[in-house]
Image (cartoon, rainbow, N blue to C red; front, side):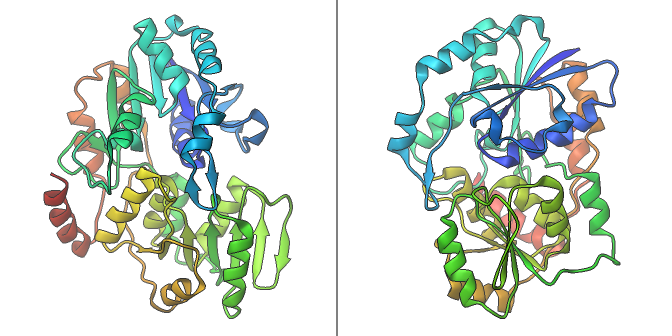
Length: 364
């Protein structure tokens, strides 16, 4: 079986999810996978060894400033002529399946060529009756048409009675979750890549009694700045900081939030303004009592969270081999069996189960 896997590169969460599956694909002799990323310049990808020799296209991207989506600048920065050219240059007919994580070039190429395509992404979950926050017609249109595929299989923290699978967490994080001897750094991990670093610096300096370790894409080298240690992007070092942290402050992307839930890390989120997915993620997590939410980077709200932070641990699957077995069958119209099998591996605390029942009624 030959697969082309298209992955949206604007957020590291898409790449994290693809890494889980790439490790699983690498164990198979019967499946060949080529990887294509779009959404950011080639020189801005890092720690990509898992994917071997991957391709990069410009695709479509989103412009953010000071923690919010800038729709006008996003529209002006994207070149539809270049997108059309990238789509036309995909040699798509040699593949049995185009697997897609909200990546427009391979999705549209498959659609135009009539090649089977399957979306496995968090965005695909929003095609179903899941909790949504202030969805508007533009949000619905983007969800449906940004990267359209013939089949779709969303991933979410709960299935809400829909054809949705749980997220996968890396085996390393699963082991860390049960490792009682793991040494805590005493530091709070901060990952707010869409926020102004000077705003972050200003607000965290106020909280001088707490030490923070902050990863940000504008940082070029490690720097100790009073109670903040700044780090450039690094997958390995970030995972180590995450497992040793006493809590996490982040935007509200799906994958990092999932890792925090898996590790039982207290979570304070600042969702990206005007980003429907992150706003909905924050809404869902808060309703379930799994995070606190702030809408601006604010020292007072951070301090309140530090004084009252609580941890909740949810066990999600780490082995994606069952999913890859299902994928290899080619029966992509019937995901019921794989959904059931994977959700049987998830373990929610009792108090979260009660809230899930309430939230499921709301979602439907």
